[in-house]
Image (cartoon, rainbow, N blue to C red; front, side):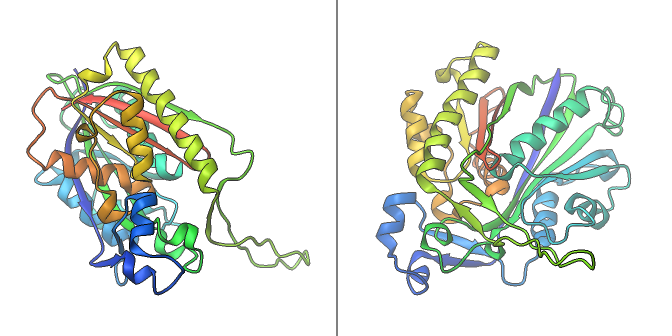
Length: 329
């Protein structure tokens, strides 16, 4: 018995932007981007709000599930449509999830990992309805981003990397299935501010100071890369050690889609074939909190996954943050 994933979904904006288009905006070219990131195109929102993407992904994950059984909605995002209400509250209202408690969290690209970790704990401890019945024992976890509105489209180092989209999963307590076997999350101080995004506030009547910093994603690529490969190894090793599962026993890995070189490095360090890693970065770019659930939705709809297969999702991001979750399908 345990908390299991019973549905997944994803949603992408209609517009797909290829590398060649970005070469018209900044000094770059298609092959340069592919060689350094593995990205060929990404989806950019034109008319779609983050809420539209979140709701679309959620509906696919929910399928025919009784909406009254959803007791919790968690949305992970760094690019909400508004600060208040929370994105989760907006999703709850849009989908008429009358029994759900709803809130957002922000751990950047690790957001879906942290959201799933939080939902599992609340379900297991009976804080999501009654976790021992099928009444209100389910949670909806969503990662959604519209990073295109916080990217500096004149900065070659970042604008080539990011895209928009949403991914989601429905979790429930099961008497029959093992579900989540183990999880581990960790935060690391970003002492060099290698991954940041600023805010801007208006001047108050009581001070002449204007609180301002650039409202763009800023990243020191080499430092983030070094952190990512180290953090992935640490959190994956921790979960495997704690659960007594070997890397070979994991059927599929679903990593955060930040950079193809990071994914290849993880595969090499754990002596695993790259084919075991679910990859969609070539068509989505880095979509922060949405990357893992979108890739997971692709895997779960591929027809490859069999009941009992062990799957590990692993992420890293701003904060700095990282985490991994191992579960049985």
